[in-house]
Amino acid sequence: MSTASRNSNDVAIVGGGIGGLTLALALSQRGIGCRVFEQTPDFAEEGVGLQLSPNATRLLDALGLGEAVRAVSVRPEAIELLDWAGGRRIFRVPLGQSCEHRFGAPLLTVRRKALHAALVGAIPEKSVVMGARLEALDTSHDHVTLRFADGTAHTAGVVVGADGLHSVVRHLLAGDALQYSGKAVYRGICASPADGIRVWTGPGQHCVAYPVTADGTVSFTAVVAGAKELRASYNGWTPELHKMFDAAQSLRRWELHDRPSTRTWVSTRVALLGDAAHAMLPFLAQGANAAIEDAYVLAGCLAPSWPHEVTPALQRYQALRVPRATKLQAEARARGQHAKPRQAATTATYLDKQEWIFAYDATSSVNQPEGASR
Ligand SMILES: Cc1cc2nc3c(=O)[nH]c(=O)nc-3n(C[C@H](O)[C@H](O)[C@H](O)COP(=O)(O)OP(=O)(O)OC[C@H]3O[C@@H](n4cnc5c(N)ncnc54)[C@H](O)[C@@H]3O)c2cc1C
Image (cartoon, rainbow, N blue to C red; front, side, top):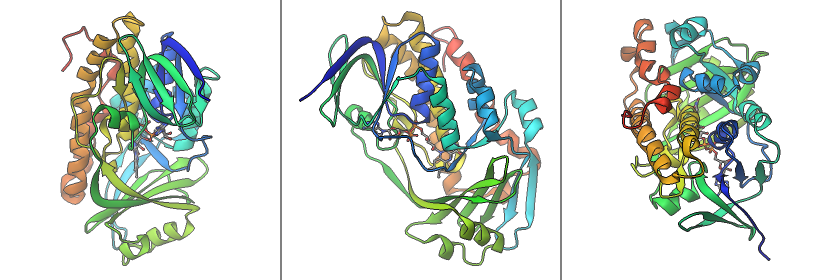
């Protein structure tokens, strides 16, 4: 038998990932009621790491979550590029205080589940419904009804699809398909002392490792081509890498996909956010950072006239976010295909290359008068 709940004055967020939970926090701070519907029965997800760059940490600060996130993160002192065979250092760029000083917010590395827990702890209790897998949406002129796999339904004023790479909401809105990159990554966690981000680079692939806790836990991501296995792919690479692979407490393979860029992220009462809107390859480490930007901007667009004028607010969100996300997607694709870090990156140029990404300030983007957005 189906049950239904109704609140046409709230926002229903499909997906309790980084993007969905950040949106729940941003909306609740602006006094907009919301409910997050998450398909998994609990949040026991794997503990891989994330780099949070200043474009996102300044928003977490603005949302009052900065201290809680700093408490569970590491501020890496530097990024080093290392040669694949002997592990020789090609360059080292200081991050830490100098990066924070330059961009006004820190670059942090964190276990995904720690960031997730900080977000869950900051949103109103009972705003997340677990085990709710969205299957369909019915849209009318003044509300949207969400239909879940267990036969339940919920009616809301706006629905936000923050349901990730395989988004059902995206499928209902755009109906396009994922694009396979021909590459995969192995991600793992191991005990290893490190105070910075290390990138080993060699023919056709690279491996990134960074600390995610202050007591010596490192998260690594190793790129491989096609169906190749991890150790075989890194045969002949520095023994330090193989030590890390052997010590991995959890090792999981991800096939890498993104989505074609689209200019349509919204309909009258439905919007996409995060990977559902702009799934990107991980070579820029910006997917979650961009989802946090989306969430901040979407809440800022909805707030002034909520619960009225919803469609213009969603269109403003789309106008503010599509150009930025499309540029990030394209850059992530390009860096994956044409990664030539030996030539391209030097101490002087590394942070300059990141400038347009790290310096971006979504707080001022959403505060711009309408029409001033690019
Ligand atoms: C190897 C790798 C490394 C990465 N490194 C970084 C990094 O360093 N920095 C960075 O910023 N990004 C990184 N990313 C990207 C980042 O992980 C994603 O972009 C980010 O998690 C997207 O957040 P999201 O909230 O949009 O989606 P997700 O985090 O995927 O969350 C989607 C949620 O929706 C739920 N869901 C799905 N379908 C339904 C449904 N039908 N009904 C209800 N719930 C549903 C899912 O269970 C999930 O909880 C990396 C990605 C990869 C693959």
